[in-house]
Amino acid sequence: NAGVTQTPKFQVLKTGQSMTLQCAQDMNHNSMYWYRQDPGMGLRLIYYSASEGTTDKGEVPNGYNVSRLNKREFSLRLESAAPSQTSVYFCASTTNHGTGTFFYEQYFGPGTRLTVT
Amino acid sequence: DQQVKQNSPSLSVQEGRISILNCDYTNSMFDYFLWYKKYPAEGPTFLISISSIKDKNEDGRFTVFLNKSAKHLSLHIVPSQPGDSAVYFCAASVTLSGTSYGKLTFGQGTILTVHP
Image (cartoon, rainbow over all chains, first blue to last red; front, side, top):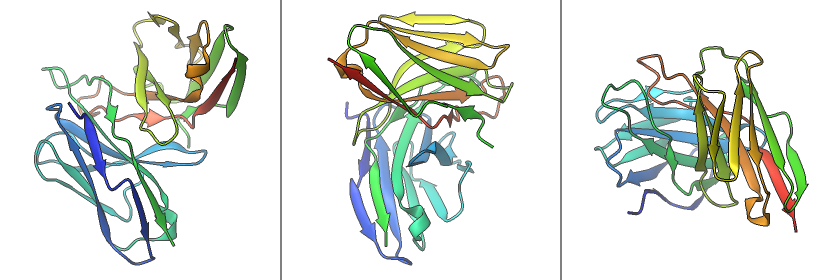
């Protein structure tokens, strides 16, 4: 099991460029998440997908879009990158009990370090 | 408004001694709490969790204590080892809501350094 994988590991963009961060999990998890980590801020939720076919905004969604391509894959797109989006991006996944109201702990990928100049 | 706070940016401990990492929260709806450990250039890894129906959970050298009235939790590591040196994040979730979908709110993290 590879767990949660993310590509690329590093990326440098110029202001205004676009890119897509890829995430895939092989644990058959229902729910997937995108976080960003900034110094002194902890991890903040950007978008999440509770299940295949659904996506919803988190705490800091502005400037981002997501696609839940299938149960395994959840991508994050920056349409027009800004220096404020310089950060480390983490994808995570988890599953829930059959009741659907309680979730296990999240498993994280290794992260993508993005610099926007 | 930071709903989960780790007020100590760093902690330095001697090998073999106890490490105590603290976390405070403000949202009384939080009912599930987790600790994650993060090494440089890696993603966070789950360490231990506790439900609000308990006040203590233990897993080997790691124990998490929850004080609901004070809205405070702590992680105890005994004995501390140099390999425990990492950033520790506490996180909280609202599980009783049908729309929580496992979303986590994280603290800022505490850098733990364990000296040999």
